[in-house]
Amino acid sequence: MPNTDTNTAVELYSNKFISGLTNALAPLRAFSLDLSDEVKEPGETVNVPLVSADTVADWNDDTNNYGRTAATLACKTVALNKRKICGFAITIAQMANFRPNYWEGKAELNQKEMADAVLTSVTDLVTGANFGDTDAKKLAVALAPFGRKAVAALRAKIVAAGLIPGKSVLALNPDFFSALLADLDSQIYGGRESIVGGAIPGLLGFRSIIEVPQYASPGFVCHPDAIAVGSRKITPADTTPYREFGSMIEPETGLAINRVWYTAGTTGQSNFSTECLYGCDVGNADALLRLV
Image 1 (spheres, rainbow, N blue to C red):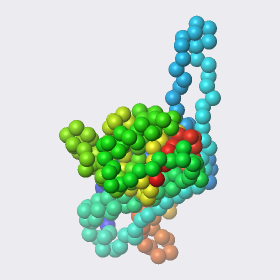
Image 2: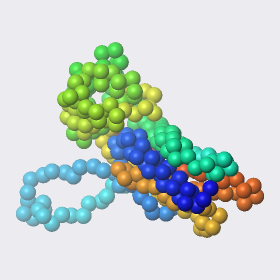
Image 3: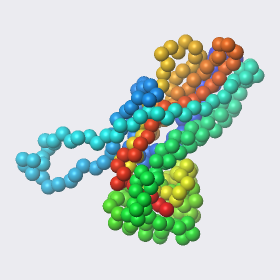
Image 4: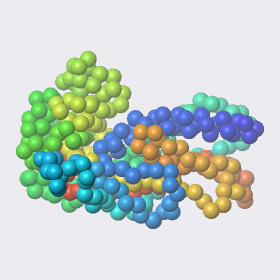
């Protein structure tokens, strides 16, 4: 396989991978993120700023004017202790006969697997042990009547519980999200965006209502500071053994995905992998309510 085809294959894979990842990672934008291409080693920590609103108060010439007092930035220290990787061997036939559709097809499938793996580990944090299992910390919902009226009733309970819908993302598993979609006029509520992207912006005053396929329970509602997610780029000290060791950045979140073309010196077998180094942890436990 000529080197020009190698470069083309990597670019085809990367472009397809990132374009699909943008939609697949939409639920990640519900949380506080600190994702960048800064290089870190697995096990190191990052400080993820927890996104929250500032207090609004009356003007005071002396104490509350344009000269702001520096606030203590609320952060969560998150260990980069999760590293997901997937990939495939590149056979002699594939090297000799370059097939663009193979690389694009692989990218389309692999980005979904990577997004699922990352989002599953993040939503696994949403438990009664982490966010409270009392009646005040969870809201009962039923699938059978779930639709606009049910979400409107749920919204009132969310307000009563102290969360602000305009700052909140309502995350629903596929059953509940589909039931809601079935009760919506797509010309008014979400349209194509909700069908393809799994997000309904602004419905009933929520910042967004999203589908979270990785979550088994009915769902949850949260402010961004409920969960902190951090990610960094990985790079080896010496890239000599690799034909390709680069990174792809998902533009909406900033999540870094490594792409690695490695040929084993002992066997001569070529391999292509994508990997992601990240970590996640509970941020503000009072900023999330579970649906049960």
